[in-house]
Image (cartoon, rainbow, N blue to C red; front, side, top):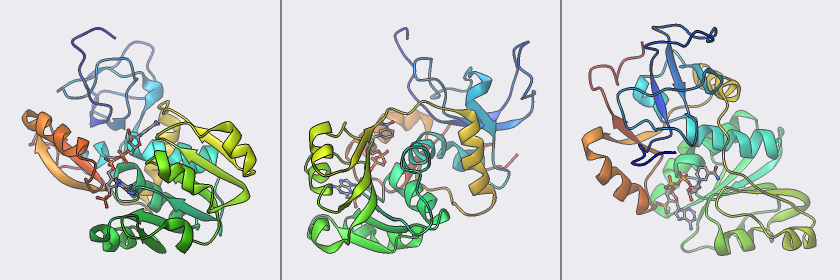
Length: 261
Ligand SMILES: NC(=O)c1ccc[n+]([C@@H]2O[C@H](COP(=O)([O-])OP(=O)(O)OC[C@H]3O[C@@H](n4cnc5c(N)ncnc54)[C@H](OP(=O)(O)O)[C@@H]3O)[C@@H](O)[C@H]2O)c1
């Protein structure tokens, strides 16, 4: 990475040009992606991306909607599908359910026919239910470990005390996947739980599988605040406050952001 670096790890747009070795995409294709971690980011009109990280944009999503999916959606996919391998009927607890990752994780778990409990402040409870959550817990006023029956999987987007207390609701043989901090291996072993942490490695094939769920209407994009790219500093302040709902969409090109092709 060279500095000054351009931030931004989500994009949707139209292919402007392809390299000579590229054969899966062509100029004019509508695509979305989570670009490489250490290349220049997407707060820009153009971005260069390896074709292995790109997928066709779901045709029913606008570019702005599609751009809200890759990072948060792939993180949910990695946690629930690749690592926890959730199956129908399993019980899943999702911490931070109203956030970017959580709002996609709830929908993904429901698309896989799991039972979903999710934590969020009371103001977000109707929202969590609208995403499909079967049980909602107000983390500010309720101890989730005393109201949620034992679960097979916890997706921890919060860390700290929330992670430690999660062992109390996990079945032996269950899986704790954190995206906030690595679980302590000794603590996981003591509770008979598989503890995981990962930092997302983007992947166009996984993104295509995720995109199919949006095309089928099994998942719905979650852009709750839109801002022009010029207001990106304000968008970061809002995000850092830690209580945004779903995703913040940054509009680079207002002529095309609301179009589907
Ligand atoms: N390892 C990775 O690859 C990876 C990938 C993506 C994200 N992350 C990390 O994962 C975390 C979540 O990311 P995000 O983008 O989903 O965050 P986000 O969108 O900023 O999350 C905001 C949400 O968190 C909820 N929240 C805050 N404190 C909570 C608590 N104690 N219990 C339950 N919910 C709480 C808020 O709900 P209320 O307003 O109702 O409080 C809000 O809806 C961040 O730390 C991020 O850096 C890691």
